[in-house]
Image 1: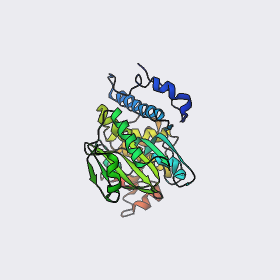
Image 2 (image 1 turned 135 degrees about the vertical axis):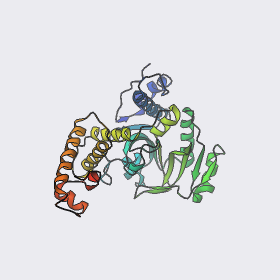
Image 3 (image 1 turned 30 degrees about the horizontal axis):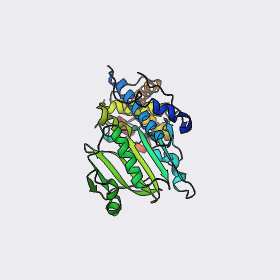
Image 4 (image 1 turned 90 degrees about the vertical axis):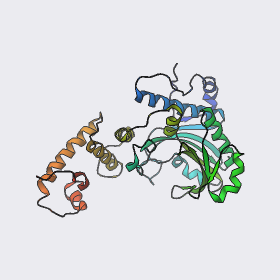
Length: 328
């Protein structure tokens, strides 16, 4: 059985809806037998995304796919959320409509937490965005129905105390509700109260009500895949390697500024940890680090007490990378 539906940046429902619904059962995302764990992870995650795509199209909602982590505006180095593509639509009072997407994201804030099975650098966000059309109750019903198609029932949801009275009835007793004053979300310019969904102690997604008139939903495909299919989490080196390859696939090269600097930093971190990656950039960075370490060994006794900024600006050496260099 195959499910090789070609990926397209934009999928008008008029063209593909009928054929996709007909193939919905055949293309179900659930596990087939594989021998390679990595192949299983990619296969099941891909099926899950296509399953969500089919579900949205069956509801008459257009779907977009973004596999690059290039940002949609200049406010971030990488795309960190599915809503970034639609920021202008949230703040345009004349625009009405609903769209769904899958968006490759990259967040570096969890860099020191990776490897615990719940934190990622690169991940895919399943999104639903409605601009003055869908209600919070409609979004809740939509997501509970979709999760039910996966056989997944959240353990509980959280709601901000300021919205508890208004939003609790929207769940109609289907899930336990826990008040949480942290249930707000902001990208720095657009804010809103939210309700969050939890399974096995992990947040799997949330529904945000930006400006009180819009809907911004994000569910992590990777976390859903782990819960549903038992896909094993990546260890630290695998997580770093996955993020590095996604940055490279998005068209970036190692450098000293912006995205290139982040890529070089992650390559350097993987090299220091003894990891490996089958890509020329990794080999080149390893050789570069060996040269910098040799330079540092040659210079450090001449320049004792110099600041990390001095070492980087003068010699291109990240002093933090040299702290484990033995004394001669």
